[in-house]
Length: 323
Image (cartoon, rainbow, N blue to C red; front, side, top):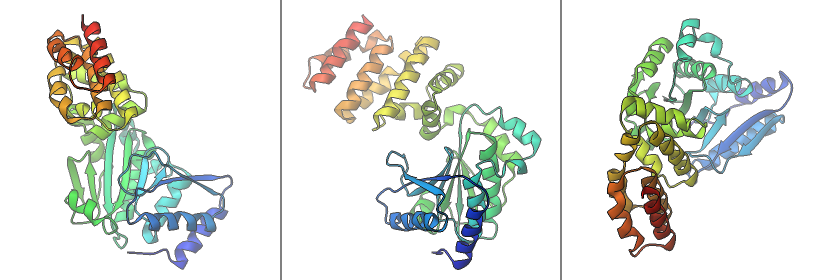
């Protein structure tokens, strides 16, 4: 695994001397064996460039140690050698590569309704990876809907194996579509626009909701006449804030498409036994908001059953709501 070199240090010092003002670098550690490497990299950046201000994010929803640039670029990689130049460029200005995206592609990017989650796997010695990364950073610089995660496949071989990555660079869109080698920004944006939103993953829907667009998620489901499978995952997510956002989206959906919302009751009742009490209470709330009176026998069983008192109380309130 490549370590930071004297040339990298000189490049960082020179970069730090150009321009004025603080530069913010947010990062997260996750209990992973590579945490110490990431912490050491952050400390080294600060030592070389004192105007870099770092913040450790204890609430970041990531499974690997990550360096964050703005709100929609993450490095699960240590950007050294060839990768250091694009990293430093966007760390100073997150739109640094936006002008490399053709005007017609930028215009089409403005039509994106749902986030596009893009992962790019790199390796430290790959000569083509910095170019692929720069294209993706350019797309992210043009649209907040494009979320880019740069992953070092050598540093995190388990992640690469899970994503069936055997070469670099490999670009993966929404865990469904992939390219190996050169990346064409126009082709990638075309696929982003042509995706069926029914296939959006939980992370894409979650990012919409966390940005305050719970209504957008509800409208997409109402327009398609389907509950997106990943939406159910958000309703049983272990983090309360995610479930809350999904519940807001569901209540909005119940106003747009009552019949569609009512149809979510059966899968929620099926999941009920397998979740903890906090999630049980929230599922009961959603069922009460569904308008589906077919759920009344189930709710009555919960209200009088051997459940936590708050779960039983939620069932009583849901019964009142449905009646």
